[in-house]
Amino acid sequence: MLRQIAVGISLLALFATGGVAAFLWWYAEATGNPAFFESEIIGYEESDAASPPLPGAIVFVGSSSIRLWDDLEGDMAPLRVLNRGFGGAQM
Image (tube, rainbow, N blue to C red; front, side, top):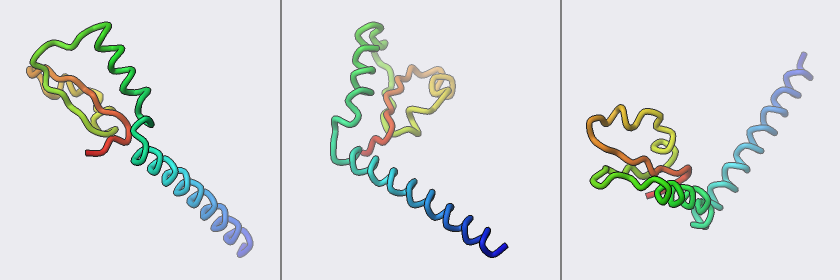
């Protein structure tokens, strides 16, 4: 029983360490390299070129808390809004 607990704790520590290491790598890349987000910005540029946003819209920028806001348009109605959040953005 004690051996099983020790193995469980060891596995938990291993997974936690791996998760922390992955997050730290991602954070270092995101904060030190603006090109890290280039693909998302290019996607916005292509979308705007294909279907330009209406003038006078309120632009929401920020991290994934903005990007993943599922019903931004509905929540801000009747205001016109444009979601331009991208994962890991910092202000």
